[in-house]
Length: 236
Image (cartoon, rainbow, N blue to C red; front, side, top):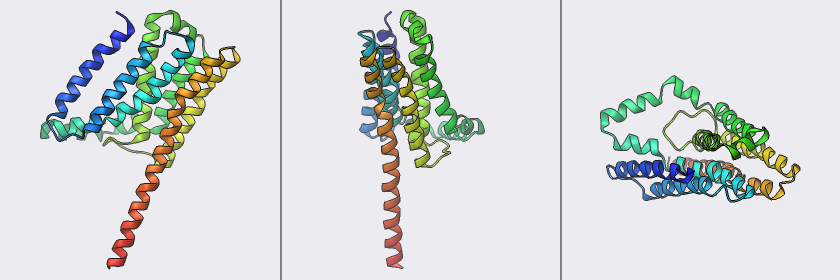
């Protein structure tokens, strides 16, 4: 079974469950589109990365910098809380407020896991080992996707989960994650793989765009609050 089929089968399962839950509540169609686009981006990143080394590196970016944030923006946790029967939803909400969840979502921990995985698989012999060993290759992609979902969940903060940092701090983490990940691209270029290095840098740019979006959303939110305060003050 090829790796693309291995990702397609669970993706269809996830989509089916998500669509079924979405029918049980008033759910914005834009979030379902985010899920479909996210699954497609992950599938593309996995399925086409054996064409060339440059496409391989771009595939990594598709997984962690395009697919992962789209999946987070689909807000699966919010959907669960809305679609589940009320007693189960209350139980899940209580579980999400547990101390271990708060510790797990500590931003530096998610950041360290993400950049650690990027550096481990791009700066060590694991890079070439993963290209030769199918099992290790699959594990690499799963680790990349898991740590990216972790980081984007913390930094986008769109789910009803414990939040630890301000938007500016979370935006800074995304920028730092992009910069540190590019160390692997620099190594590729120094080793003579310039096109692959450039492809990796370009594919990681959505991390920086995400940082800008988080910061800009915070600015717009504060402006709205200020206008509301001014209206309330004028009416008093």
